[in-house]
Image (cartoon, rainbow, N blue to C red; front, top):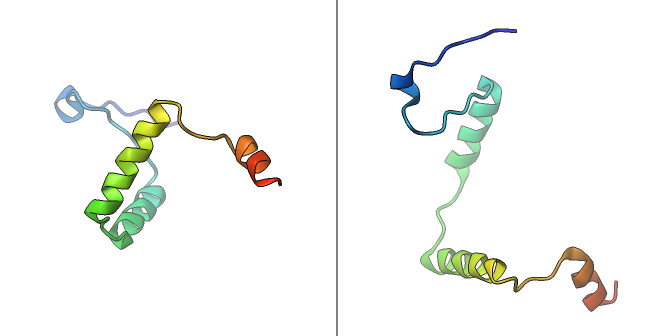
Length: 69
């Protein structure tokens, strides 16, 4: 097992995450190919998070029951 020491100057107060290069490159390719979301989509996402916080959602089991599956 390799051990490395990250100087406080580099880590700072933020979280520091170490991932293998292959995974990092895959993530970069994914984000580079992602399309920006519209203002309407951003609003819908925020609305969805607010509904989840208020408990206004169905579990997958509840949804299946509601759909008769």
